[in-house]
Image (cartoon, rainbow, N blue to C red; front, side):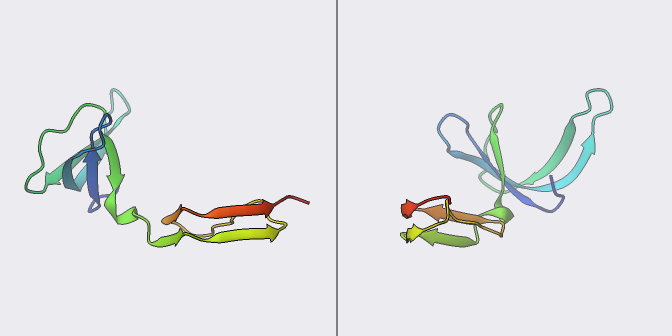
Length: 98
């Protein structure tokens, strides 16, 4: 959890966005050892369900590799040396490890 980060909360069952908030403070509960975070909620944020999924919006993919063909080479796949990458709808043909 990063103070100042924008977080999106989604319902674990149907993936609907329940709320968006900015983390204003974090601490560690001394009795349980769990992290506690305080949020400043954006307008329209409703009640957050128990066990909601949490995503730091600032870490959403910044690199997109899609609809690409990778074939006839010795590699087993794609080596990605970056954060925030989304790969989708790619085709790997005749890739192998030698």
